[in-house]
Length: 280
Image (cartoon, rainbow, N blue to C red; front, top):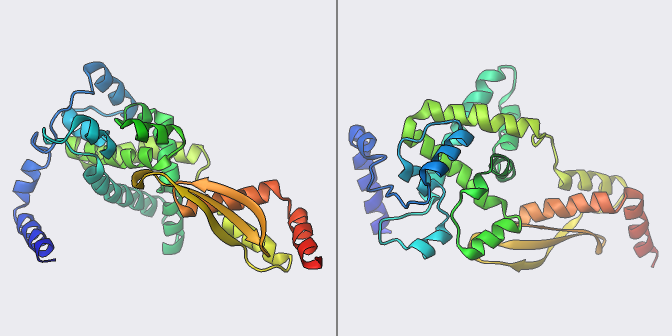
């Protein structure tokens, strides 16, 4: 704990010298060039992001999943994209909040918060990443690459956040804002990802309207390494299994289970199943 406070104190001391922070923010020592973004790859990425890349090392780090460090090692000062992801997440929330605040003056705080949560989430960012083809640039270990092919949203979503930070460090806040507002947001809106799809709420309302207790979600299985967990979840009413779902976390697996319960078990069938159990 003492070491943590010492690090915090050192950080606050640096804040007193903002010029030093600005000067060193994108120093080559922090972002050594790995070499996987060749001139052709760099040009292709620039076209996708619609932004000029000044220093390749920043973007290579943004595209380096932590699993890839086991391939290239960390002796050359190489890092994963996790620190950039931290910065990009904050930038994304600020940019989207500012955009929604200015473009929707009639919305209340609650409405703005709800709309932002629909725009800024792992699913929408992952969709943007796949739509832009960012997944093809991410450097991964073999196991992480397999997880990506199996549908792990978080790897691509995290890389999008890291790219936002890379654009910010490489060419400034306005370019980062332009990328979010002019590139990412239109993809999300056009794909209808901001439509309310809270299947757990929909299932709860319907089941209760039929006179039955709230659905219960149970984890059926859990597998995978820490950086890429996989959950199987079942949704039950009166101990009757109505649907199952899978996902990289319990929340997404529960949503899929509820969705499948709605799609695969018409509400009349749900009632028949529950009634049948009660009769027995």
